[in-house]
Amino acid sequence: MATDHKASLLSALTNQRDHILEDLEALPDDALRRSVLPSGWTPLGLAYHLAMDVERFWFLDVMVGDPSAIAEGVADGWHPPDDMTAESVLALYRRQIEQANAVIEATPLDAPPKNWPARWPTWRFDDLQELMLHVITETAVHAGHLDAVRELIDGSQYLVLG
Image (spheres, rainbow, N blue to C red):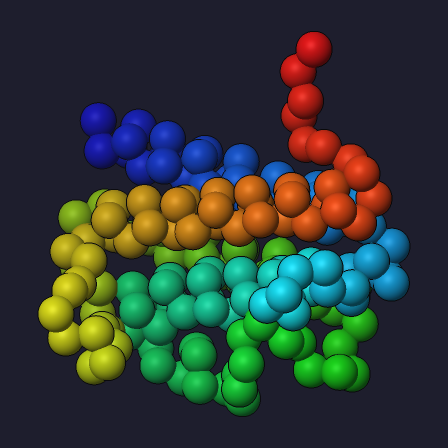
């Protein structure tokens, strides 16, 4: 039963990740680096954020307990270093997904996180299941953000029925 539940959670997460990657891969480099919202983030910045602040942070830092996972020079998770190509940012996101999937595979759903940020003392995820639900939600929200940005950039709409 737990294996089936974990597989369902991973499937939902994979669907959202694939949605993000499909939207990003459809954009040319100049559109990936273009900001159309007042906050200033770009589609490429979103991919970097998902790689570093979501996949890497939640699964490697929080779940596995490796604080160096996030401490390796990430000053601003919404802005990739200027010298990173679009291909390298998307490859980074894919690598972080692979590492996160390895953590998910190796960790029971009821396992508690091994590290929790001191800056959040009043709340905490109890286990991998809660953490996965959070990452699914965060990734899905960002997929919606990216859908709106894609429509502003090139007029495309994701999975329009009818």
